[in-house]
Length: 240
Image (cartoon, rainbow, N blue to C red; front, side, top):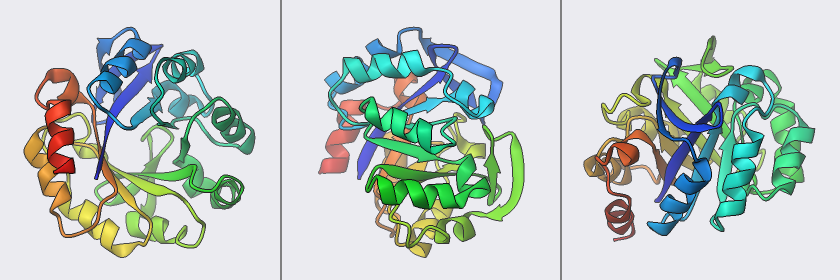
């Protein structure tokens, strides 16, 4: 199981939100590239990047910060937030991103996900962000009636690289991940699932690893910044 340190970008800075609220952002580093280098130096094998402003705007906003990260580290990076057309997908993959994450368009334009996954094998992931089992879009600001497992199953044959599942009520809240819901999703689809939201200590990662479903990875942000989760130790445990 891969551990993905998260770098969430707002106004060019590295921040963490509380349950997805843009007005509850804590700045952890005003140099995202330096933060990326620090994670890489501690042994991270991947980075998870989010353009928070872009998620609301519907187009890239923190492109400069993302490009700075890509120039600063050699490890693969995945990015979500504001990627809603083929031109933006092609632009980011052309700049060296290993994987783009499509969230809002997975609900609003699923054909684009299929088209992108066919054009860029193993480089397109679907981001499913949910509140109480229902998918939320547009930076988590818009609630839908779409259920998590139904959305995942729509892409079973599309060739997407992974599903990144975020429980919004756990994100940034340091309350632990929703292990049961994550495991249920992983068991309901053949697509690899990456857990996001609520990982606050080493025991949370162990619980996800041992949940009975073969999770592909887990994302952690605030716990790493707060020092409640030691990245090197966590990587060692997951490999062991």
